[in-house]
Image (cartoon, rainbow over all chains, first blue to last red; front, top):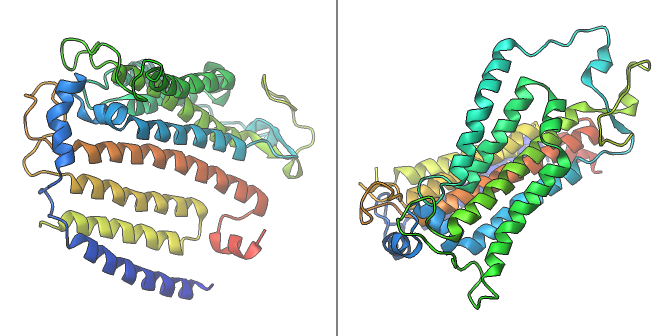
Length: 268
Length: 114
């Protein structure tokens, strides 16, 4: 199909889409006039029922907890899928980028980048843990906290090099943390079943004060496990993508006398 | 003004789809797909908005303050996570496509058939 035909098809499709969109929108009540009872019912009941003041977390980890289990496993599957798609193909091997041009100096990471990255690593880690453990109180939770936790490890990569990232987050350990996070969420939900309750029922004591760190029972616990899972999954995904920069295909080799070496855990 | 956010949704969706259709680079095409998906965030948050209401967090305000619909906000959060995961998977497909075919132009890739 030529680009011109492609544009024609696109124009036709958009005309149809626009018609359906206008038809669909014509029945909506307009911006700022949300009519539905569902959200308002939850708003009135959530603080009393769950002792969580962050209603979005209460919905994610309790009212729609079943949905969130599925969503977490989408992330789990995507991390596994990235690992499988980017597996080492035949004829590929690991090699440092410097080997291809042995006579050229690799520019060192600038002092400013190193210092800023090192200064931020600790605080970023702290913020990540704080977010992952305060889902019941604030606009935070395991998903947000986990991504920020992963950022702390990427700062280590920025301040040093890829091999340092591999050392501070070994693949086997990161995968284990990811599995514990994903499995922990499911296990908390399944644990309700032998007690005669429905899957993901909030069976833990909910505390005295709404919004306190110790309040809201399983919501806080699930958020913590989600934080582990999301953080580990993102470290794995980014590690897989970064590792591609070190792969060299046999056919592409320019310099036959290059130093060849491998890091621990990689097969030749 | 009452329907302005939904016009923005349609605009983001159309721009993203146009990018996907006419793209000459897989990474560009993946970014266009992210733009398409961004329209769903605006739609979800726009549908649940209540004029004059606060965010659904009652840590330091009375529990019965009027707030916007929290359900669509939870859905938007779900949407963001899935988008990040899908983007990572698509980018790794792009890497493998480049390794195998030596090009990232979707129009050339379509003619290679293999």
